[in-house]
Length: 544
Image 1 (cartoon, rainbow, N blue to C red):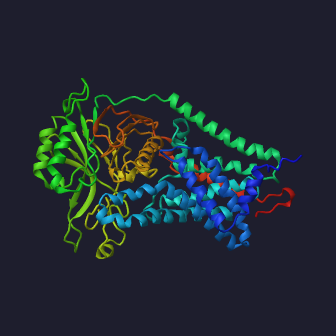
Image 2 (cartoon, rainbow, N blue to C red; image 1 turned 120 degrees about the horizontal axis):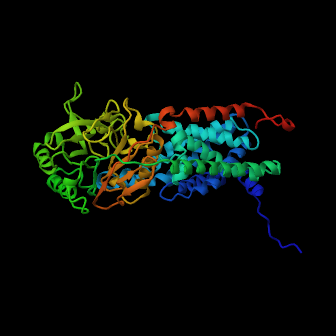
Image 3 (cartoon, rainbow, N blue to C red; image 1 turned 180 degrees about the vertical axis):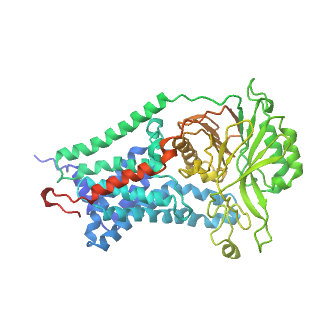
């Protein structure tokens, strides 16, 4: 007798998603995007993408029900926007924590910040879905179309309007050291292309009109691709010996200064005393204090005052630092005002200070955070009573170029302040290739949320892309030493007040990505595009 049970098949699920419309279609797109966010740190559950991307493909299949032509493209764009909105809302909600640091001033902006940023970033996903739908082909080839569309969208998201390449899909694969090594060849944007191709492959399991051979071959090919990527990574890791620069002894200070104190000038003496105590702390028989250190590193914006104008503070630093020790620290740097302005320009900078308290070199942050370090249309915004959350009147000014600094006693260094480190390729944009990277940052704005973990992870991926070790000094954590293969050798937990002593790994030879940039990705994308241009001849099938 019939049991009355309905058999659920992949094909049946695909049909139900394809035919979904109205609020159900919106909910599926939003939910699939939100689920995809769990592939990112600190969760790292990347198999969820094997659900999210097939749902997105089936929803784009159903966009043709809107009536064809531009109506299909608009339906695809709506689907892409809701997918992107769910993804970025679930992955970036922690941004709102920054508006609670001075809640009396900024808490009212929290709802807008938490929703408007994901809404704006989702526009790129909408564009990617439209491009994918323009290239749509029957069967497995529509996976190529989705991969091209989303990769283009992610690349634009990382470059247009100053760019914000946070939580690129490719980071899903980089949380495992063997899979991550592909970034040395194609960068994280190239891994984004691979990620979409691999995890959208289960789509064909629901294509009931496709032959069983194809339905088996495509997902199998995706699994084999991951295996090949892992084998390459395993070979690269096992074949690479990491050596250390002789004579270099680093001390990274993580002061964990509460964010609401960092910009209070009256906390000046307390903050300086805290740095002095931590910097000269004995941590082992080999590190009894600053006498056993060659380079001391303090984090971004270490002082609630202009260090360059404070002779007493510089004198205290000179008293602290033993002969032969160099301090590298973040600090705001005032400069001459622009013509017609009274207030000085202020830069978010890094200083190199010798044992006499003399500032020998500076680096000014080039890539500033919109709304954090400056306001678009600054004067008009301030006239309305708005200000950046750093409360720097007039906003920070951007440095004119990236520079590699020559610091005594250590190989040339490329400094990346705060979120400059999230931009692929920016690490070696200077004329002289650095031999290590230094990321000075302050993630205390975001407390114990996914944000600092995501930031730390993206920092490690820059090491793989460039073949360079990365030293990270963060006010509240995560301070760390990352080797050129992206492995964290030493780290201080988020929220702890401590110091990290470390040797400096040597740089590897320039990687393929360091030399060729996005060229390998462009070649692969062009090949996929040409495949999509070919019309299918089998059974007279035409592109949908």
